[in-house]
Length: 432
Ligand SMILES: Cc1ncc(COP(=O)(O)O)c(C=O)c1O
Image (cartoon, rainbow, N blue to C red):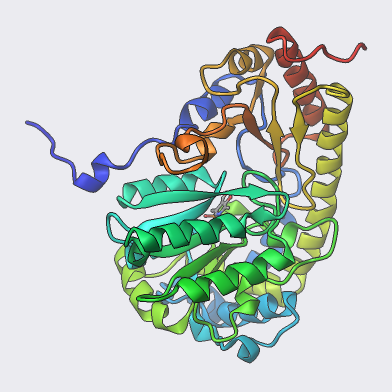
């Protein structure tokens, strides 16, 4: 008998990256710079064990943590999240018109991203993302039948001048009312490692206010990597510029600064969105893991969280230095090759002299050498023929994640990339 799946199922595709991830699992010798996993050696086993002991040794605390929690999330944790988020921006929650009721705990920030799509977006609505952007989010938008338009980035993040032009064009064609959301990963972006500059933040807020005509345009500020800054001065969040709590939905996660295995994220939202969002969350799971939330509450209360994030900054700085030094050494003097210099997070964006796509000779040579990267074209939405270059994504870029490989593996991975580039005639590797 034929199985008739939903329209949404037909729009829901495997992530193009899955095939390459499978390669990494099957080939033990392969060094993967593709997976966006965190540094394994610094995962906080001791801290989590101690917090778990603390919770479970007390009968009352154990029962509370092992019982169902609320859909909204554990209130003491929401309180701490809010205090910390405000402190990062040097403001008090009431300065930006938020209370702990505007904080929602989710099963990773990914769940929040998806639920916001269900909450705000109808098929045919428009979401604007950075070009390039986080391909998993693009997949969720495709699944929801949403049109994704992209705005190019430069060293300062999303080009707000081009965003303004895009919105003006959509207004002219009568499509502005379909624009519901602008998605930005504004700290150490996945995939480029770039951060939205302070002037651009102000411009973005101004543009969103001006173009919110028939309906409000929201900014989805995905600050998953904000806490992993290891260099330079912090910049205030867009949320902190949204004094009336009207436009910005801040999405953050414990996955990167603590442990993805806890799969706990959160949002700080305009108050009107909270109750409707919770109805969707009720349908999904009526509450994220209560034990994980009690654990995180304990880790935040006893200072272990803060200490861990501090340590992580050193770990990722060292890894960033390692991969940048290795790239500089391997590709010294190479024309047509450049890469970003992230001040935090886990990603370097490489622009190659030759194509990097899944079927390219460079990808084949890289796999043969035993190194894997994310082809940059996966981070673009193709087919918008009004976009630069007729909507054809650049084919010579790559995302390199330095999160999971060890420093020795990072050096070796870059040597392998160098050999792959040499095989393709892109570059002669350094003599050694
Ligand atoms: C930019 C960005 N947002 C959201 C997520 C989702 O993370 P999680 O659901 O584990 O919180 C990720 C994971 O890699 C990410 O890179």
